[in-house]
Length: 299
Ligand code: RIB
Image 1 (spheres, rainbow, N blue to C red):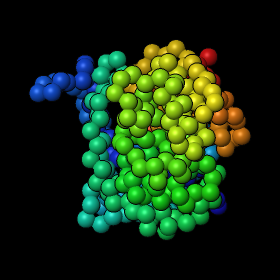
Image 2: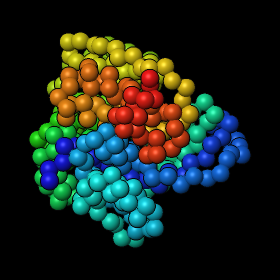
Image 3: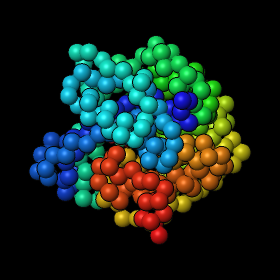
């Protein structure tokens, strides 16, 4: 069956420790018990979209160690098509080491492992899963060449969440319909040193043949920027427990809204709510809400 949303991206095993505060360079802090949780920006976005009711496929690579079974099962339990989630021999799985501070903020180091072995040929092998999906969701935890191949192959809308931040070739950006950076990522993409605002996003949206740039602003919500307009979408007030995965659920909810034919501003308003609710529970994938949970937790 053709998926509504295909995610081309990473799957990581998240090794999560709660700490009072994120340590400075050269500092050691004691934290809580280690939690091993399925994560990775790609897999989180796939699970988030499936939790919201969409038919989802995941394209990428797992490694050969035992974490691979955990990561695949975490997708399949949500009926996500994993036929193009390949296994790479003699390569470890992606791992993310995450410190979560008492205020819910985090610090993450990722070892890409098998995610770093995804190729443009893998995208070709995935065929219709990428070509025919209504929305293709991309991030930057796999090689840029594979991201670009997916953006080029897609006939549906292409959403790129440029995380972790990197400078990107225009040969990729010109195949992206909607870019979803946070402010740090926007600064890097636009080559700005100082604080970025709507005018920076507008300039980027005008420079590239892109439908829109949707800038995530954390507790302040998001900004939907087209070449002609900038609309601020405020976030509901919540007290975060763990912000891990909030950006991922935002991207998935944006894609969900577009599949349901919402306008981009309405889809962003929905995404801001889903992102906010994701911060109310610990861990990335365990915190991803259903539509009913979004309504209940924000009422
Ligand atoms: O966006 C959150 C994710 O970033 C985590 O699940 C971790 O795996 C890192 O990739």
